[in-house]
Length: 172
Image (cartoon, rainbow, N blue to C red; front, top):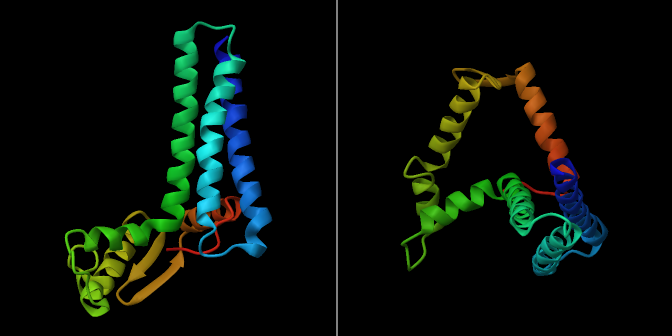
């Protein structure tokens, strides 16, 4: 019973992801800066529809387990959305956090200086490079950066493959 319940959730979630990624692949040639609205609308319809599908497909199990299955489906949807967000918007989120509380906006030069809690773009880049070196993903020796370690190559190839599979063109 648990395996079949999980299978219904997994198939529904896979269907949602494939539908969204397929939509992104098909609309790539005609995509504009406002195309995110159609993508969001597709998800806004697909997630409740998927929840209903999970609920309806499991009518033979107790309602409490069906609620859990729907929650598992919704958690899977959140993981998918967060994965897309992390892969595409990491730097944008940092900029938004730096602009929080600045009602009048900010100049590009000041934002560049303050970026990353005051370390600036250069400081943030150095901090990220040191983190990559500490995680043994890249060699860092003074001003020499690289090459990637074997683990770094695996992470880079995996991240690139995920971005391609999710139809994500740009970073940041």
